[in-house]
Length: 415
Ligand code: NAP
Image 1 (cartoon, rainbow, N blue to C red):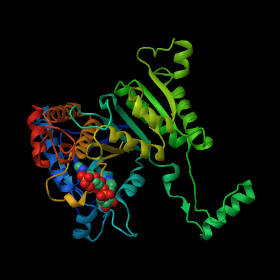
Image 2 (spheres, rainbow, N blue to C red):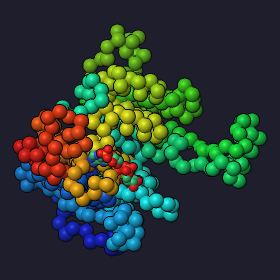
Image 3 (cartoon, protein in one colour):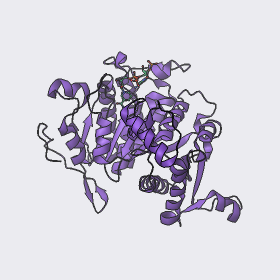
Image 4 (cartoon, rainbow, N blue to C red):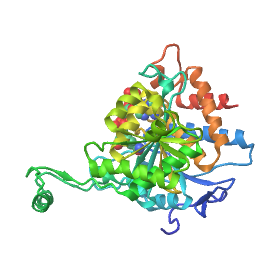
């Protein structure tokens, strides 16, 4: 893609570069952001203050993010007559790492989704969702402190790729006729039909990313979650390819559940990461009843979608779950909830999801001290029961604060 046409980049700061397969992060990286629609500006303002304060505190002025606003959604439509200007895509591509608030999905067709466009342009093949509990945050389960998982959801394959035709359409009829004739498959004449592609390439790069993360962050296990008992050549193959990758590329660092039982007396040898697999439906049960069994999870697109939201609900729900869409180098971090339009401009909603997405972003930059500073501030704030309305209504003795006041409390608690 070519240079920016309508946007002027900041005069200060430098671009993050990719050199020899690694990120080179300057002390003043330019980071494009989209504040988002609805409550987006509220949670962006609060989160940005937290990010800047944490970086200042951690590096005493030596490092600083140079923010570069780019546009999508309603704001872009008003200013540029487009829901998704090309320059926004160019900026995310050029500056490598970016962050975004929630965007309105216009009703009716004919527009391009930013997430889909970015995912395709930058090949953001892993959707990463860390889920942990903060002490004090209300939860529907007895032991939310047992939940500490990072879900790596494959983002580019599976039933989600949109290869489908509606019931009764000429295309669906043609496809049904084809598979009936060629493979002897029985599909009802009036069925809608879709394709579920899953490949060794797509699976292995996802599992590789999950394993690298587990190694770098000293996690205990990587669980491959699949529905291979029913869909053998897609979900079942995902499991096989996952194990194959672990064996081929991480043989010295991993140990399978089988080997632990047969060769190591049921104990994972020190320094090794357990690689195991679980059927998806059992995973839903066990994440509820014995979440300690899970650490890093690698799974397909559909399973990952459901699992991420289900486990997020266990630790405080929608206002708190961060996410990142990541390729080998490019990454876009985002609030995982929507625009919550009825609260727009009220300075009311929880900025936690976007703030924690920023924590993931700082970790991606290698600025772990700043990331840890924010976590420390949030931990202390929740312990003090200083929370926004969504959590206050579920807590006894909470002090309900506005979005901006929550940010101030987090900043005060970071020192
Ligand atoms: P939503 O915006 O996620 O809001 C649904 C409910 O979730 C809110 O009414 C609120 O519940 C709670 N909630 C959401 N964000 C919160 C926050 N930061 N703090 C506390 N509570 C929060 O879902 P929606 O109303 O279905 O969607 C609205 C728009 O967002 C649509 O245009 C949709 O397409 C879009 N959307 C965008 C994204 C994205 O950009 N990533 C994702 C999903 C949806 P209570 O009212 O019960 O307090």
